[in-house]
Image 1 (cartoon, rainbow, N blue to C red):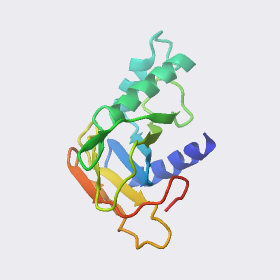
Image 2 (cartoon, rainbow, N blue to C red):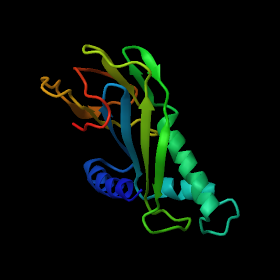
Image 3 (cartoon, rainbow, N blue to C red):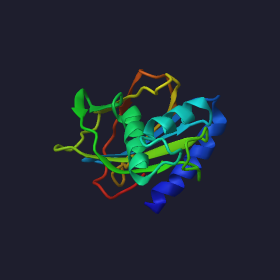
Length: 190
């Protein structure tokens, strides 16, 4: 959980400086022969939008987010990421399995305009090994239709030439297809 928190802070700081006010999404996927692991971070800049999100979670209207209210806010922000996200392997849709999630209220648990972030760790196991030439497909939409910073990394089998990693900003709703090479078994990192 600490590793996820550190990544959230680092990605959040970099993403927040790169765009105007609003939602900022950065998704990083790592592929092996039989798994897709994703780290998905959504930052929300401070302002009225955050105040409304926090107020919506404050069910008892005391101005302070309790543990249960924070959990409800985390669930809402998680749905902002997972509901419009589509993953696939050469046309075969992959289910989204959230392994771990973390909400960062930036040290302010009150109903305020302070920014917030959510990070999700996805892990998808697919029943068949990925073959060279298949494509990993990602289609994502942010709540305000802003672009998504996307990275797709491949854990290449030993001795094999690597396929190029994909890194770039992708317009909301645009499908990205990344050609896959001969991937390593799970456990190896790119």
